[in-house]
Length: 117
Image 1 (cartoon, rainbow, N blue to C red):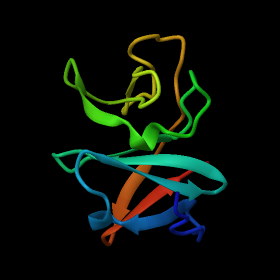
Image 2 (image 1 turned 180 degrees about the vertical axis):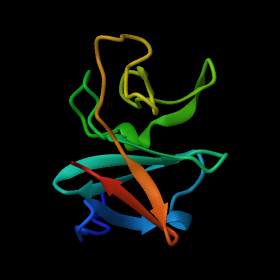
Image 3 (image 1 turned 135 degrees about the vertical axis):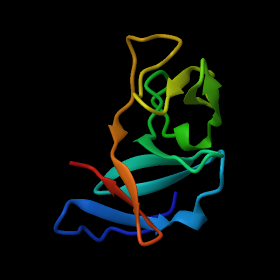
């Protein structure tokens, strides 16, 4: 994991990296405001930010998961036990009782920003 930026803006958005630093269908982990965040950029250019901790194993690995879709919903499969999480809601699509935190993410002037409020 790389700490890309820890500069907090007055708006609560924290710049993390350049949009072009994120490869389509690949995850990246960033430490943002003390939270490990898994960032994903899909092929269509959408961005998603979820907690990096797999609730089933407790490992900080979701940024290393396999990105895909399930029933048209962008998702990531944990590299540990392969449970699939929605990138939109954070809910585990295999066990809706489990979920990971989601975070607002946006691009401002080519920079990916995350809010951890």
